[in-house]
Amino acid sequence: MREFTNPPLASAPPVGGLADVVFDHALEDPLHIALGRKDEQGQWRDVTSAEFRDEVLALAKGLLAQGIRFGDRVAIMCRTRYEWTLFDFALWTIGAQVVPIYPTSSAEQVFWMLYDAEVSAVMVEHEDHAMTIATVVDRLPQLHQLWQLDVGAVQELYEAGAHIDDEVVHRHRRAVTPESTATIIYTSGTTGRPKGCVISHANFMFEADTVIQRWEPVFHSKRGDEAATLLFLPLAHVFGRMVQVAAFRGKVKFGHQPQLNAAALLPDLAAFQPTFFLAVPYIFEKVFNAARRKAEKDGKSGPFEKAVEVAVRYADAVESKAWGIGPGPSASLRMQHQFFDKVVYSKVRAAMGGRVKHAMSGGSAMDRRLGLFFAGAGVSIYEGYGLTESTAAATANPPERTRFGTVGQAIPGTTVHIADDGEIWLHGENVFQGYLNNQKATDATLHDGWLATGDLGSLDEDGYLTITGRKKEILVTSGGKSVSPGILEERVRDHPLVAQCIVVGNDRPYIAALVTLDSEAVEHWLQMRGKPQLSAAQLVRDPDLETEVRRAVVAANTLVSQAESIRTFRILAHQFTEEHGLLTPSLKLKRKAIEKAYSTEVEALYRA
Image 1 (tube, rainbow, N blue to C red):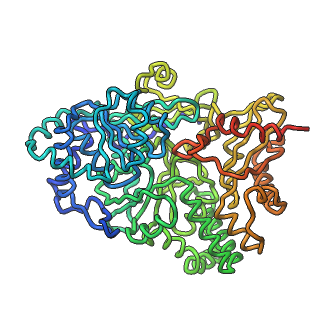
Image 2 (image 1 turned 90 degrees about the vertical axis):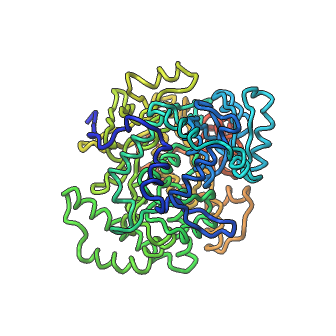
């Protein structure tokens, strides 16, 4: 199949903008619990629709009082927290355009985004962010306002706008149309300088309403309960932003968690008890690996691995039955599954808050076996695919017929087309308006409404999409063999000791790889084998560790031909980090930067 179209369920409203839902919901049901918010004592408290509306209105007045006008661009540099959502909707209320900035961005990255978008004001979280702005402010003559959250910026704005009449705000709000620009989201810049994606209110409304209508059943843990989700994705990323918008439009209670480490996230999952959540594969890998390490520490490694095998087989059998190609789980398998549900799977679900039955995953590919494990453990993960340019999801697995290992079908109202060279093209109301101040890039990406994604993929006979690589990342060996590195890297990363893997070999005689280690997993591995703690330099030379990584490489090589296989590898002492310019804020590898930083190690891979 070369093209698949899914009939629409929703379309963008003919009038209005994203902020209208805040005021409409407060009018319809003022006592509805819209959000959960942590107080100063760290306890979660409810925020009603009416309370949030009043806060948005008060902040919108303050922004007007401080000189922000319709069409102005205002940047937000902050972690995922309540105030980001408050600023988003207040700025949309007065027709301003929001420019999200990752809180980990370097000074030069910040400068480029503020300069390119001609940002007139910035909201930052704390002093470190303010200092980053200060280092480049002399090159930003258009920037005239800075607010800092941790020194009372919200209250300051409330007070500044107290004298402004409500109707002034509503006049601005009524001027917003679906075609108005809602946000400029900069791409992560894996292949060059970040580009600003212009996304309209209509793009977001179509995307969010489609997801709500098609996947609404997965928001609940059981029939009739109140849907709730904990948002821990970065709000600087389009995926997190879409979750925020969809939660409001779908009346899903949601809270914010700014830290992705287990020590902070797990207690909040237990306290907030979401009914579902949306994440990237990295999160599910972390949950799985933590469960595996705990089982090993408790001396239950064998039973845990057996439980994993049963979960995978059970989910695989359920999937086969759903597609009419199998009878479903056997009586013996059902009994084993029931036993492990009590002793293993229930604990995995408890680690995610106890109520989660469904989750959605995007951002990068998820291993089929990992998806099957979670499904067998009672948490169905619906994998999807999208870009900033498609306002998040363009495809996703439908709840009733998931095909693990794929990113699903086109979401309703969207068409997926596979071009002659294998590139994925998308069409729908979620496709962005173009790149800010970059007509050349826009012309290269948008073709009569079609978005050329730069990703490679294939459609099966049922219209399910499988991602096979990225055009710009294809390696061509000196022997002329084209190799897509993604499939190899993902399989190597499946090993619990491996943190990252980058495959190299462009214009080289064969394929090789650089591998980094997961420090938590390695520490656990050393303890379980009675080995002393080793320095990073000692670790990379440990023969037992090298054997483990070699197993991961051998497993990856089973997926490809001999000419495409990883011939040799090197374990690195340190992980690739954003701070060193080797990862994007969304944790994607900056290939050219890594190969340059580790040129000595790469050269060593090809010495005779």
